[in-house]
Amino acid sequence: MTTSNYYQTPNRHEGGVFELGCAFFWSLSMVPEEVQRRLRQGRASQEQMGAFMHAMGDPEALLSHLPLVDQPLLREFAPFYLDWLNHPTYDEYWKRIAHSEFYKQMTVPALNMGGWYDLFLGGDAGQLHGQPWPVPTSVWSSVPGPTSTALACSRSGRTA
Image 1 (cartoon, rainbow, N blue to C red):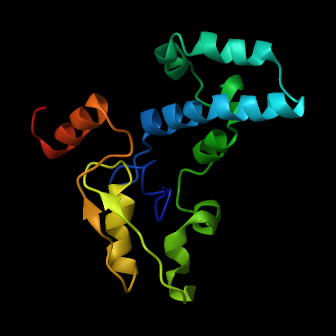
Image 2 (image 1 turned 60 degrees about the horizontal axis):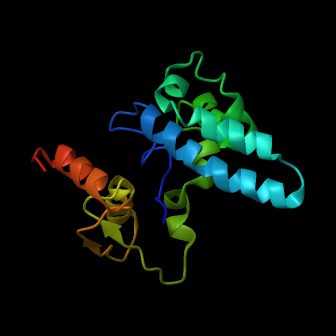
């Protein structure tokens, strides 16, 4: 699951406003797997996993901590988050990882699918304009359950 351009979706709203909550919590969600990988390699400790679990007991405190770049947990286990903060404009950092920048070079067929209630929908819909093939879209979300239903409804103006 991915987007055609990470600068635009899911990290940005229309107009370029950084989606701090989405980027922050997605980055945090990558930490346990990274700690587990490092534990298997002998490059992390159970104490670090414990510190993460303790921090996740109050994620709002993490999000409220300033400055935004002072996030030791993310600096250690999800440093890409700090890269995102350090590149507020669509520069070479973002262009290098944007699939949409390379559409004209693609010569093989690709199947891209999107969900109407998916947080990557903006990127999926953007692919319609850059590709010579359609993007099938159906009713689903990246994260199934009540949260995704509420998110979908809030984006559409309906109530759950």
